[in-house]
Image 1: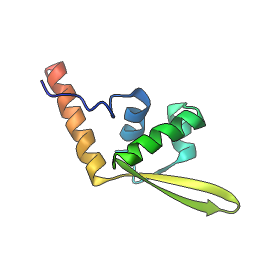
Image 2: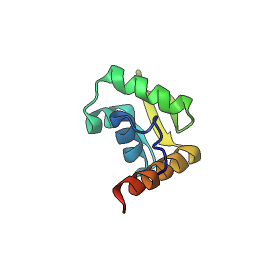
Image 3: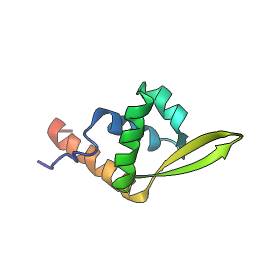
Image 4: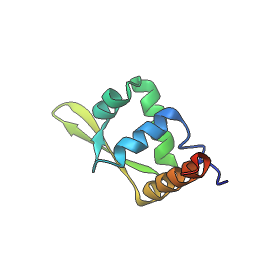
Length: 93
């Protein structure tokens, strides 16, 4: 059986990647709402995905507020697809 990527096997990181695979981009507030994560936990998990090269985060200002926009990278897309394929082997699909 194929090994599951431990970085993607985390519930919150998998949720973030699943969301980002279906949209062009998502901001921090949207991801926080969709995952019901705390801001601190989401921030840590986004940092881990960024460090792995799975997502990119662009920070900008909207008025006086910071806005962080996340996008999946080609490497992240490949990693996610490999994770799903590995999971299928465990489920015998």
